[in-house]
Length: 315
Length: 315
Image (tube, rainbow over all chains, first blue to last red; front, top):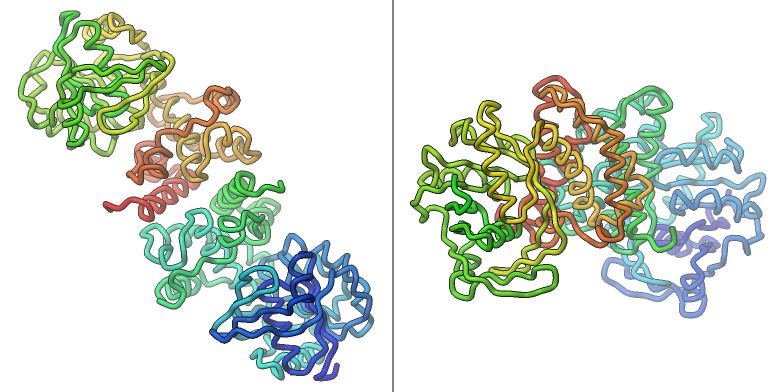
């Protein structure tokens, strides 16, 4: 893979568009792929509006419906919502050739199981990212601050491919490193999202408010104990106290303050379905299949689904 | 006790005012007692506005702060919110003499434990009621339909007193009967409230919407299984399927339809604290004390308390 590579972003929402913008700026040949027509049209007709740490600019970057892209890519970065992952992989079959690396930086548990149905194991690279971004509206994203990425090829014999992707991301300032245990990283991030995102959504509160709730540590601990028990099945060790400490820090920082987690944005603000089945729902389902009691995650999942049924128009 | 009795309503909200109105109309000497000053003042200055099945009338009925009432009553009817019960009992000590019957028709579990600290067992009558009422604003209530009451003296040797109260209530058209197992009746009502009220509050939905939720029966069943396990400690048998059937009926009837349960009115609409500690919280607490796992009721209680912390001004 060249440093100047052909890169397709599969799911060009807030995060996908930020990555696309940064990777194109570094000289790569980038295409944004998204099924939201109005978003794609706006980007093609007016450009992508980028609020980059307070500086607004409009950049030209190609955008297309995923099915319309036929050219094989060097790198495809998956940034869909988890529940749209399967459809996206169907749509982008034409972009994945025998040398294409497929990088998944999506939140949630169980994504690899889905990707493996479409992509050979050697080509799959997964990771977690602390970059953030917000979708202001069609063709318009906004972000501040910086982030990092840890990633790994899921086939341990193929770390060269992952190393090349790290170089390519770092050339674009995306601050990537090779992880030695990305599965644990993914679980840890899911632990944070499975408490903070899910509970802020159910309680309709922001991260700062959540951090001040007397009940937050107790609820989080019960949820996380179940995450830890299910993670053990996948040989992942979760230190519940460590996650609780990081949750506390998130709630404390004045910068996270009035920020609403993405699941809240999806369901409460935009009346869209959530990724709950790939967080608490995954734990509840795997727990049930393996005789591990997961009442907390089961109820959280049921409540979020109930809330979806009430708020989401397209049921 | 005479049929024309001196009756004090301790807590003259929606239900208390309806009972006071009906009992006064039947010729009793009724006084409303409430700690909401604006409500009391409005009733004294302008009368109590009563929307009785669509007919609006203004009636004259005395209202006072509970502490100000010094005269011993024949009957005191407790209709406070459960968390204000203790304070109310302190405030109305002067109204309870050696022949006063104290009737509690309040929702929730554990009320008798509190009343017994202030009133001799022989004088305590407890019951459940299916009458409903709504507080429109200070000095203004609204209601439709009719209801019923089942009651019992908690000292089994004192059913004569309960029988007299039944006669007095029936003379006012309140449709009362002597119950033979009021503890079970109270638990059954708490089962309905602990699912319907608590979940409608958490999900911000009305009873009709709740009835249509795919997740409702599963969530209700888990919550009710824990209610049943804890009820057994008090020698009360709860048939979970029977409660589920009655919940289903409540969700089906077009008349219950867009009605929001009282806990939703309290917390979501009026930002007041809820009675959760006397429903799901009671089950969680008793379960914990007796080694019975109650994760569903524990989480429901924690979530409602968290929501209170977010919404209620006076924390």
